Length: 123
Figure 1 (cartoon, helix red, strand yellow):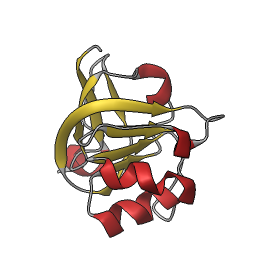
Figure 2 (cartoon, rainbow, N blue to C red):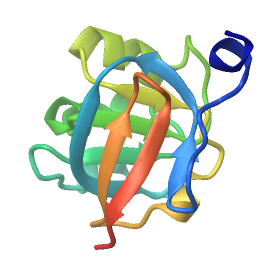
Figure 3 (cartoon, helix red, strand yellow):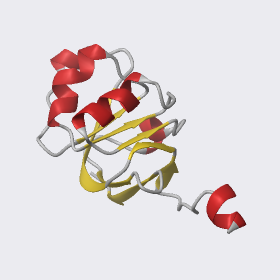
Figure 4 (cartoon, helix red, strand yellow):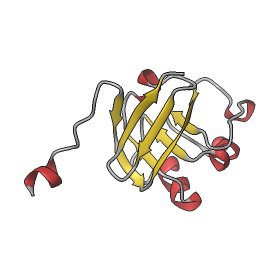
């Protein structure tokens, strides 16, 4: 029982680990939102996964089309966490390096039940 409670699941080289803000298991194409970018200027395919350093209200049009949210920063009361619960889409926060490891167009699996994002296929 100690391992289940205190040890994070093992993740491979093509994976990142964070904290689940809203559970679920989905797959989709990654859309990286650069920190210095205006999110309103970006397009995302329906079923895409938003990968960002953090989110704010300007991201809402993108988030409504996404199947999951993954952020480098944030806690359970962060914008991404709250919006994911409102929209009922899986969300992993606090990954620290998802925007560095995952690239635009990568096919990813977001397992927000375990807090793990895995790269299935490079884009």
